[in-house]
Structure formats: C-alpha cells, structure tokens
Image (cartoon, rainbow, N blue to C red; front, side, top):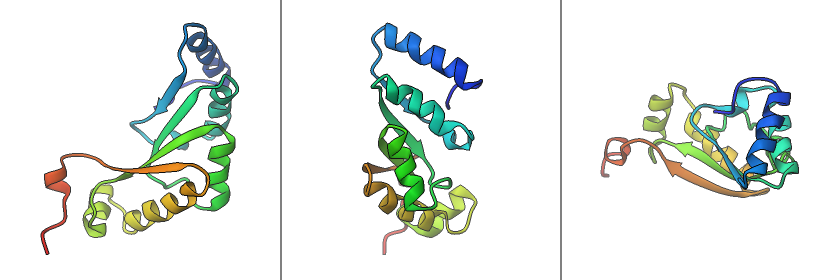
Length: 132
C-alpha cells in the first residue's frame, strides 16, 4: 500500500528512491486508490520517470475518464484482481455482488489507455469454478 503521510513525505521518498537508482514502483496489497491524493502521489513518481504498476480491484475506476486519469498520473501498467473465472465465486470472495462484472468492465476501460493484465489471486485450485 502507498506509504502513509502527506504528498510532501511521498515526494521526499520518491526523490530518495530516484537518487539511489530506483526506476519502478508497484502499488499493491490493499486498495491504494482509497487515498484521495493517489493520483497526485503517482504524478510525483511520473515526473521522475518511474515505471508504475498498479494492482487494483476496480472499485474506484467507474468510467473511461477515471481510467484516463490513471494514465495521466503516469500509471504504466494495471493489474485487475480476479479471484475466479466464475463470477459467483469471485463475488463471494470479494463479498460484493457484481464485483466480477465491475472488474471486467474496468479492464475494458483501462485497456483503452494502458496494457491491462488480469491476474488470479489466491490458490488457483480453490478458486476455480467447478468443471462443467
């Protein structure tokens, strides 16, 4: 998850990472977009030419404009979490009806602006839909 604190603190961390030769940042494990200043923070890394990967569940990307805003903030790659190829299983794991459809829709929004990688989390055997 994105470091807690102000964008001033994030800017200082980004500069430190840049100075020691870092070139990439991955936002993962936790929904980083819950931060109201996520796009501002990502823009700090964009301005230092970091390659940025964002793992997300899709909840905070509701429109094409939201996806475009990620691209504008410098997100180079996104990974939308999908827990099962069976929508009912995915929704159950996420605890929200329609979560699978949201992840699918978000994938199409993001694909328009950046390469979108969908990935399967957890233990694949436990998350797979039953054989038909």
